[in-house]
Length: 309
Image (cartoon, rainbow, N blue to C red; front, side, top):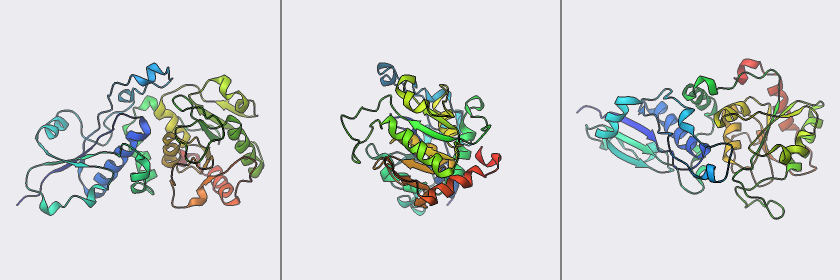
């Protein structure tokens, strides 16, 4: 009996880029480890919300990506038409597929995310594979949306506003999709610079207005990154020597794909992104930055520029 042809495709869902990336990453990694053939996902999905909320990013992801190292075009269409489908949820595909029980017909594994608590249910499956996934994401990203190499080291600061709600008081650990205080970002930047002993330049990535960001941008050697596509922001954050993160999946992926030491607001890290927890800390106002974290940042400062591409 001949072995069946096994294909896999990530089902991206209707949410933002970070949500879709998890399905893509799990699928891409499983195909790499098993030899299954990956079909390129469908990034084209009309979204009305960003227009209604007047967000800067309209989430037109289809224009950002090519097929990369996956199969598209007529061959993808043939597989979608002919193969028997197996739907996989947040579990790892290999844990529920028994190849010995498959027949000779081609099989298509459809990798879905959980609708709720997406990262919490599946992100552990990709930890440790950030470098491989970054390489694959770069291969898939159209050249004009890939960021250039940094001209000098920088601390990345991601300030998520847009569709995040304003808190009525302090931001609690249980809150999700919530804006963090602007003065917290500034306080943490000051603390990290003090620990390093000099003012590393800081680049602010944000969908907020310049007026909203003013208390942060007033600091020395701190500037806002001009508006650019979401994947460009994501990949450029990965060039940073450190990341002062928002409580969003976008910050999570930006840090993870670049192996960037991440500093989060208390209770807002979402989940760990590294096995070495000293690279991934939470720190509130007025606290000292742990020495181990500072050492990770210093190590990034001393890396050859080619490693941060």
